Image (tube, rainbow, N blue to C red; front, side, top):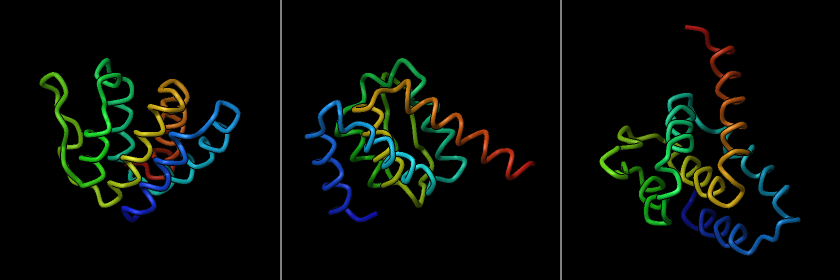
Amino acid sequence: MGRARFARIRAIVKGAKTTEKSGLVSLLHELEQRLPLVAVEELIRLVASPHFHAVTDREVRSISEYDCIEIEGERYFERAFSPGKEAASSLALARWIGPERVLADLRQLHAGLVAANPA
């Protein structure tokens, strides 16, 4: 996902009203389908943590640029993911839609990925 598309998504999300959030959930699902299992696991770890509420636009941008972030001494996304933009966009959507909804979606996606690729 290119920088322009990420910026466009961010602008759409920032201007979204509550009634438009269902469209954001559809966008979230589209982005999540591009994430590898390891990225889904890291998103779950961050969104489920008490550090989630400290995530700022700066952290989202860092993830989109394939950098790790550190919040209160805890490091996230230390490994570079090829779909870093999708992971960052999913994190940004979690901030706007709400972590509970996104966490439920990520956990469902995780279960599906694990079932499809047993160890």
